[in-house]
Length: 143
Image (tube, rainbow, N blue to C red; front, side, top):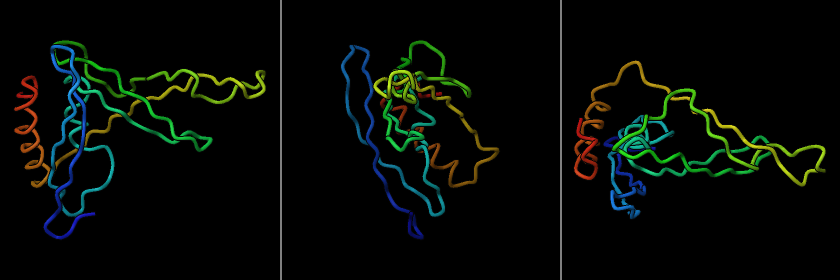
């Protein structure tokens, strides 16, 4: 994914301002050699509990792509998404047999949050850089 010195990747996200407006923003993160693809560190650290709307996607068992939005939880209240949290996506599940395939059940998605046992020096540095970047746009991120 990255060369020997790493590479810079941009990511886009939307956030809801306190006045209710939605603002699209772009940030850049330096990707170090050996980092794997997966959920971006920014999404893991600055998820919906800090006031961000995140669109996610998954591949259904029948091959369809299903897009859904993680629930919005503002910085002023609410609980962060915890391991085992479930999202119900209406009419995106498996076809209901008695309907002849014309209607579908609900798709239930369980969020499984995996925390690393430890971080190496470059990951700690990246987390600190992300904290500095995010605390300038989300005051609640400055912890």
